[in-house]
Length: 498
Ligand code: NAD
Image (tube, rainbow, N blue to C red):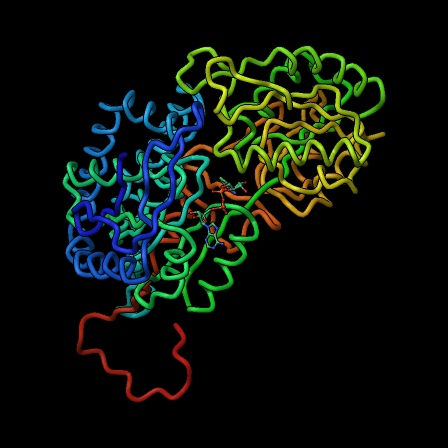
């Protein structure tokens, strides 16, 4: 059995707590590794290593830091296939989707390669007599990332690449359910020339998370996961004076206007609703057709598409989606389907009985489609995080717009229409952080920022893009006067530029 410890100070370190977590291979249901669950002392050891290494790294000029990022990018690209396989094996998503997970992470590494430009300050020559004013960005010191199971490459890279490029040292606490890729990322960073101690991985659960949140030397925490934990991390981390950005769960709607191209809509919905078995924070989980005719047409077209979704093991090259992450999560999703039926929603496609031949112990289920879901139902309110799509019928555009606006989450949303006026009005009025127009999964590219609103995000600076540089640096502003001999005498009023 593969034992996964921690990566501290440039070395693999065995876990000392005696506590471990099972890492499953969801496609077969087998336990394929045991991951150490860290103690607070092990987190502290990682922080000490990071703290010792950080000043030297911060003093390394930004172009050289960027070169390490370029080299890291090259190393990951070289072993893309092996990494995608490892990721798919531990997570359950298909190989194609695992490649996308790595790719969207690498795009943020590419962004971080621009750090010499990104960290440039501002300069005003002659702001007053002999006075120049300038600003500089400096790293925070030791920062940490706590990440979820569903993107084991992308999200750790979104967190660590900008942080490290800016001159910080990083402690990552990845999901204990799929820690293999983050551990390999640590080895590749070292091989790329990153000094030991700048990127550390501490595996673990709540004990490790709490130790991170309480550690006086960790200046900032970037979290991604479910909303209750995001809120907890934000509250506890900020109470300790840390900068915290905590991204939570979602309930993403797709509004289907009567004039939408229905072929495009149905393709988009099956991909965004069922891809990665619905285990994406940007998955569409609610379709909102506007008007009865649109709704009847949409549901009639969706039923055969959902019934014919191809489910397969992660190694399959033609499956639409694979198994869920764990048996426990599968049971939770199946429980929601049961709840939906009891609540009176119409289950048009029931994927609960699906069995994967040859993989009977894997964590599979088929796609489920509910029609006539009402906003007061639990299956509408809660994030299910599985291959379950709910259709909530809206009488008109206003009623459709109110659904995402009244929802507690505000991560992603989409509208499909051929009416530019409706699209523009929607983009402006919807109370959600990331909006797609005829685009179902509007995950912004690396040079824009990613972040939801309402209970999908606690904090105020988004992930990647320019906000990531703001989050992982502090700004210093210098007012300097030369030549040194200028004398104004003692001034007792607030200095102004006369
Ligand atoms: P999770 O909240 O269970 O776990 C996230 C992290 O928190 C993990 O590292 C985990 O070890 C840790 N954790 C879990 N329970 C904890 C506790 N009680 N105390 C302290 N730490 C704890 O989330 P998950 O199941 O790994 O991931 C799925 C969730 O993440 C979904 O809700 C999904 O929407 C969300 N997500 C959000 C985004 C986003 O950007 N908004 C992106 C991806 C995933």
